[in-house]
Image (cartoon, rainbow, N blue to C red):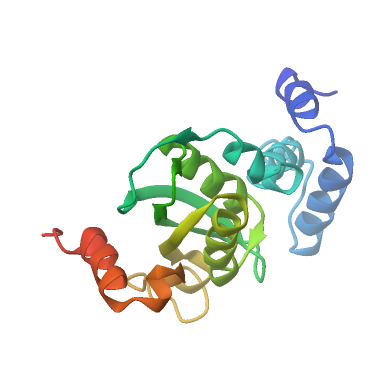
Amino acid sequence: MPTDADQRSRLEHPKVDHDRIERAVREILLAVGEDPDRDGLRETPARVARMYAELFEGLHADPRQHLKKFFTEKYDEIVLVRDISFNSMCEHHLLPFIGKAHVGYIPDGRVIGLSKLARIVEVIARRPQVQERLTDSIADLLVDELNVKGVAVVVEATHTCMTIRGVRRPESLCVTSAMRGLFRSNLSSRSEVMALIYGQRS
């Protein structure tokens, strides 16, 4: 019988087939030699369905909606939001990678609310992903939707597909960057934004 949490999740994520996920999780438990009917696992398929609905909600959301409202300003220097935390799911193993994104741009007559940069990171991250595509997607979205002179995106993340399995290197950190416009063509602009991101770290 569906719980209140199941009902809420179905209402919040109507495009996700919860029942299908539950059946699949039950099959996985059987395949690894577990008993999905024992007390500790009886509600696990429903919990996993709710979790996947939440973690993959970016598949059914358009990040461009957060870039529709802007403000006219003469400011034409770097705007940077550092340390935007996110979590995503590696599409190769369906294991999480967790980190932070640094997103900057050089406006050309208009700016957006700072929280919008965090919101687009969250939407794009909540999909099966690889970090390289995540980084490029954020940068390309800003270029396509805003009138900007340059965009810089740097993403740092720890991948559990490397830390808890396979090579098992918990100290590893993956860093990716995507530079567009002036940040790609002008070395001083690129150096300036990288200094803003890393230069004052202890």
